[in-house]
Length: 282
Image 1: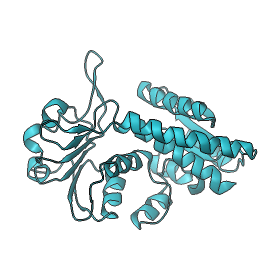
Image 2: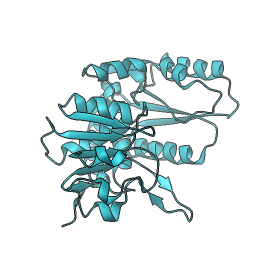
Image 3: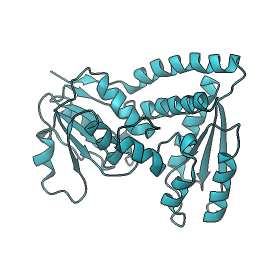
Image 4: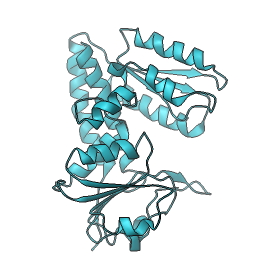
C-alpha cells in the first residue's frame, strides 16, 4: 500500500485563507503589514523564490517591496540598507534572500536584522530562543516542516527522528524543534558514515541534503514519515527532491512530494511570521 501524500500546497491554501482574514482585520484598523526582501545579485533560483514571496504578499494584501542590490554591493552598504529598514516603522518584516555573494558575510548580515523584524528566523537571537524552546520567529522552512508532520496526528514524543542536513537554515533548527517536541533526534550530514544504518531506524525522516535521489527505498523504515526538503533541477528542467519518491512511497506511511510539499509551506510560514510581526508591533 502506497504512503499517503502530505500535500503542502493544499495545506498552505488553508493557512493562506486564514491569514487573508487576519490581514483584512488589520487593514480595517488602518494597519498594513509590510515585508521587505533584500536580494543581492541576480541568482536565477533566488529570483524565483523572491517572486513567489512577493506574489503571496500581494494575494493577502501585505505590502511587499523587493530591494534589489547589485552583485558587487559592499558589506557596509548592505548593513546600512538593513539598518535603515530596522528603523523604518512602516516595515514589519525583513528578509535577506540567501545565498548571498561570497564576499558578503552571512553571519554578520543576519545578525544585523532586528530580531523583532526577523521573519525568516535566522538572527542568532531567534535561533537561541528556538534552542531554548521559547516563543520566537522560527525559520520558515522548519516551521512548515513541523506543520506538515503535526498534520499526520502522529505522537512525536519518543519517536526516532533522523534529519539529513545540518544547515543553519533547515537542518539544525528542525532538529531543535523536534527535540523540543520530545523526539529522539539524530542529525546526519556529508561526513556521516553508513547513512542507511541511521535512516533505517527512523520513524520520521527529514531529508535536506540537496542531492537528488539520495534516499532510496532500502534506506527507509516501513511506515516512516518522510519529509523531502530537497529541490533539485535535473538536465531537461525536471524538479526532483532528495528522495526517490516513487519507490520510497511504497514503504512510507506519509511522504511529501517535490514540488508541492515543503515549498508552499515555507511561503505560508513566512506569511504567518510577517503578520505576527505586524501584530506585535501594532
